[in-house]
Structure formats: C-alpha cells, structure tokens
Length: 249
Image (cartoon, rainbow, N blue to C red; front, side):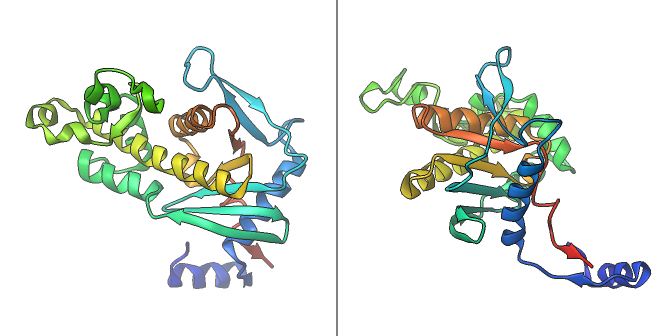
C-alpha cells in the first residue's frame, strides 16, 4: 500500500492515473484468470500429496476447470474467507484477525527477529512440541473416545506455564509454535466454513504463503486429516493478491 507522498510521486513521475478497484473483486478475478492461463503447460492450482511425510511429499497439479462453488481463503495480515458461487456472486463468510501479521508480530516480540523471512527460517529449525501442550501430555496417549490423536495440539503454548519448560524452549521453538498456532487456527476456521457452505474446493492464497511451505503443508495435512479425505487444500503457483491489486490506466 502506498503512502500519500509516494503515491503522488508515482502518479506524477509516471504520468499515470490509478483506478481504484475493490480488493476482493480483484482477488477472485485474479485466481480465475491465472488458472485459465495455466503454469508451464499445466494447471496453476496444485495440492500436496503426503504433506506430513518429508520424503514422500510432492506437489501435484489440480484442474480447477469447474471452480464453483469455491472457498477462497485470503491470508494476509489478517484473514478473509469468501464463498464464491460465480464470477460475480460471492460473499465474505467470515475472517479472523489472527493471520500473517499476527505470526510476524509475535515472532518479533518472542524471538527478536526483524524480517518475515527470518521468522520463517527460525520456525523451520524449531520444535513446537517443546512449547505446545499435546493431547498425549494430558491423557498419556490418544483420546480414542473422541478420535483425538496423541500428537494433536491440546493447548497452544500450554507448556509455557511451566518455568522449567519456558527456560528450555529456544527462540526457534517459539517461532515454530507461533507458526503452527496461527496456521492451525486458519485451517480449523476454513474447514468449518467449507462444511457450513457445503463446499469441497478450498483455495488458500495471500502473502503469508508466498515463501511459507511449512504453513502450506500444515494446512494440507490438517484439512485432509480432519475431513477424513473429503477436503483438499489447494494453492496457486503464483500469489494472487499482489498480481491484481488494482488497474493502472
């Protein structure tokens, strides 16, 4: 987003006029356009197969030839979730203030990092189980009655109630736990929206995912696991919200 002075300089030096358009209109048109163009001869959209297995995980193209209805999850500083029924018929279902800005802001406070890329790099080396309280930490294993596996997070940052565990957690562990906290929250809300709207195509876009394979794989695994294979998390080879921020004339 341009500040007033920068915008004036841009318009003056470039001798251009800017036409302001609605962000979410542009987002939807953008994802439909780039999918129609494709990517290196294949679909622009893709999903992860075996997202939880580092050795077997692979990206596979997904043909979005029948895009409607579509749940579009736009993850920027915050999150907006749109139910799209046609090119011109959509509604904002809900959103959350816990998005990419939350992840980066908390990482700045908890780790002293200064860039988003640094926060992600730290998260890639961390162990969130030293920070989060898991189901097995409470029940000693799986909570079979309700189908909760022992590895599931029962309380994000729950282990930080213990002074001993706070002292044992590294900055990398804190960054990883922050990333998982934000990503799990987004995935949970997206899944509930998909169920409520009876939509089985869920596309995630936004700046938060641009260099963030960890979060994409987390979203892919979470949606597949908790929906028992009924939902796939779809992504775009190109990040859409910055490709079509408006029109220059």
